[in-house]
Amino acid sequence: MDLTTPQQPFAAPVLHGPDGTPYYLTPTPNLTAPPALYHPATPASVVHGPALAPTTVYLPAPPPATNPAPARDPWPARLLAGGVALGAGGLGIGYAVQAVAAAAGSVGGLAALGVGAYALAKTTGGGGGRGSGQGAVNVHVNVSNRNR
Image 1: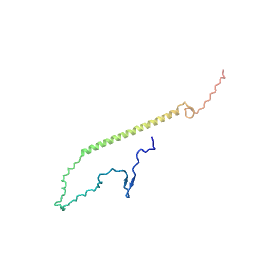
Image 2: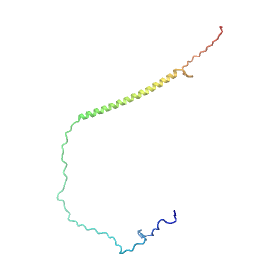
Image 3: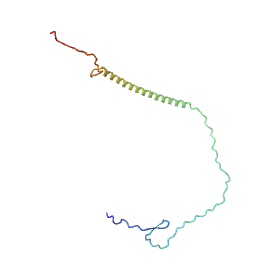
Image 4: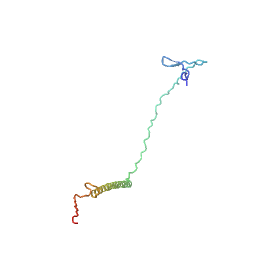
């Protein structure tokens, strides 16, 4: 691709007026009539009549008074809600106690296995050294065949 030749024709020079308005110097077509200037239409004058004083003042009517319903104590609903809450609380406490018991049983079982393994390792023989089941008795046997 040849980059030495411009891809577009050169832009027309731009002159700026004293207020910064750009004027593009391009050839314009010949006009058959002088250009018309835009003049906005003047708005029609509004004629106001005499001010009218209100003859009556409108106030909204107050809401109708309603008699409150007689207050009833919904004791069956309260008893039912209390029973459900107590039952749910009891279930929660039961599950918590069961979980604590299971954890304690697991920990106790692991501790018992550990103690048993330790005791078994200390009482049986099999290895040399201290605590392997060998006593501290030194036995020396001297066998001779003199009576032959």
